[in-house]
Image 1: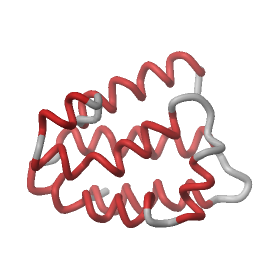
Image 2 (image 1 turned 90 degrees about the vertical axis):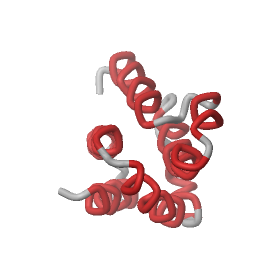
Image 3 (image 1 turned 90 degrees about the horizontal axis):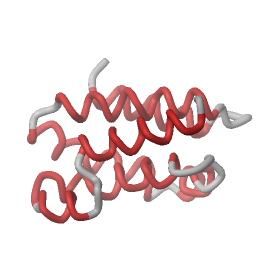
Image 4 (image 1 turned 180 degrees about the vertical axis):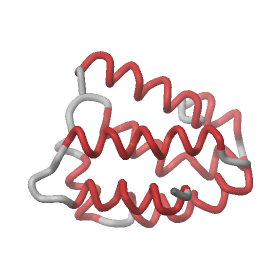
Length: 115
């Protein structure tokens, strides 16, 4: 799947009723792994897509708030910091929001929850 398709799948998983936390976690992991492998250009091109799909959508934003532990903030940071990853990598690093740092945070969250 392309990075865009993975983001769309993540968005769909967040909208699913009832909220399927393991599925959201799985989709989040797939997006983060793809972001790790992506070129800077790919990261830059999906930054706006993530921002529009997650942050600009009140329904999704509210559903994120119901996710357990750090999963919500990982997804929110992924959506809001992709632009910094490309344009101001030091800022992204300072907020532990580079793709590598986000994946590390996710894996720690996953290990702690058993999801």
